Amino acid sequence: MQAHPQEQEFSSELVLTLNDSREVETIYQALYPETIVTISPRSRCTIEKQNSNQLVLRFYATDFVSLRAILSSFFRWIDAAYESIQSCKKI
Image 1: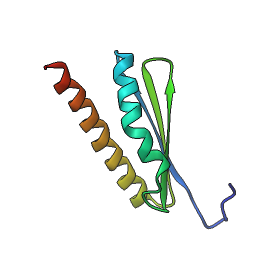
Image 2: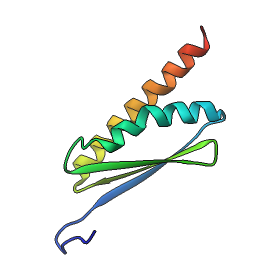
Image 3: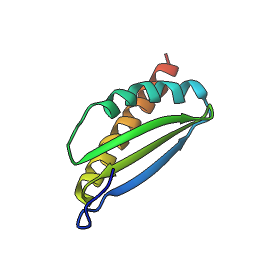
């Protein structure tokens, strides 16, 4: 993809490291559908598993406000998935 000189793309990378590979897989499965649906034409995210205990999420946006919004959404989804996992462990 080429950007026009006046266009900028903002990006961020999040590396999530967990001790339990099953938790990594569960969070990956929870987040993956959000990466294949276009939430906004101004932002997108990719996700990949790295090793057995890491997720790498890369965020791209046409402007800083969109980058902040997609980061906030994914942080909430990661937290919800992780808290769900922890709740299930107590059962």
